[in-house]
Each structure stands twice: as C-alpha cells, then as structure tokens.
Length: 109
Image 1 (spheres, rainbow, N blue to C red):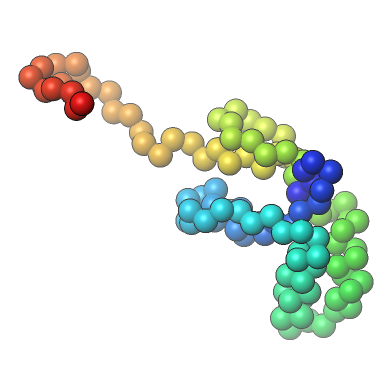
Image 2 (tube, rainbow, N blue to C red):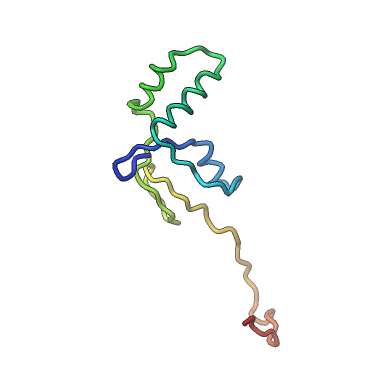
C-alpha cells in the first residue's frame, strides 16, 4: 500500500476476510519494518527452505507485488490499484404494494 508517500504492508487474506464480511476487524496497515517481521516469520514457518533476507528484499521491488495507491468506498468500479471497501448492500429490497403498509401505523419519535 502506497499512500501519502509512505509504504505500508497489508495482508491480503485479511483484506479478503473484511471485504467478504467474514470479519468486522479493520485492515491493518503495517509499517515496512513490521511488515518485514511478518514476512520473515511467514517464510521461516514454511517447509521449503529459502534465503529469507534475499526473498524479502526481492518482495519490495518485484513487479508482481500488488501495490494499492488509493482507498475508496465506492459502488462504482475502481482501478486495480485502489483498495475499495465497498461490498454492496447488506439488505435487499422487496417490492410490495403500498397497500401492505398499515395506514394506522405511527412513526417513532
């Protein structure tokens, strides 16, 4: 994530969980040093050995690393570089005749 001239790291599985409604947690934006700790912990937990330092250095410059440059909350399509928090309506409308509304109902104060 590149916003306001600063680089932040986000976890894509966390973004997916938030956008799918599986969690109401906020998306964490890690500073570079914290992101590197998370990357190192992840790489060291893998069953395939790797040069962790070299892999992390490559991560920062690899063109396949996805970089968001904007955040939006929009029902309209946004560019792939925009992290769009919009997930659509949680409630779907049901078309009914107006006569199904109770004419004696009073509004709440």
